[in-house]
Length: 253
Image 1: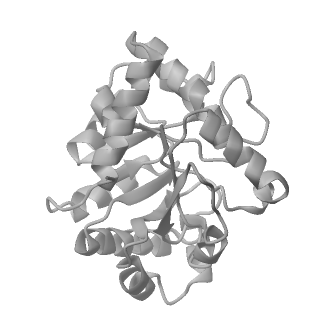
Image 2: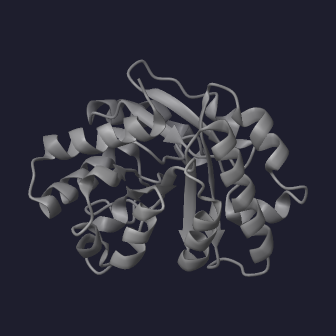
Image 3: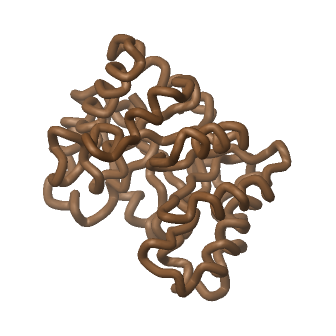
């Protein structure tokens, strides 16, 4: 399995990182995609190693951090994002939940990330919180046939999900799909499995039955099991489909 969105480099894992990675490998995780919070995240990613897991870096500025980079992320995205070790651009996106003071800066940052992703021919990873219509409008504006990526932590309506698919996006399915009252499971059940990828967003949003605990890659098996139930297919088939989707999107060998 491929965890397409995991902040495994954060301090929450510092004390027991090798045990966490051993559990991930035992659960069948072969690849971990690491979205950046800011440019400094790259140095934290460098420390990770495990004999049975491949780690993949992204470069980007989280929308909640754009006010700390007044010059904008554009130049560094193009210069450092061109490296072979950088597999995607992000995470970027919009977040109107934590602050509405920097909306224009967030939107400009999102546009710069999309432009870098198209130029560098890499996926863009999208964060979205209480900003769905603006996010999809900007993706539509930026889509010229070259833009591909993931709506991370998908929690939209059926209409929003289909609109995202029409715009060329994949949908990242994480622990929220297992939450009883979130309603995401009913929406996901009506979407095509060949455009879904698995993720944890660890250390956040642990799935049931681990909800409320620190999330980690090995817990992704619970999300995969939920998808199996929703689509009426085996866990092995869910793993195969979502892994193939991730490999296709990120162009993994």
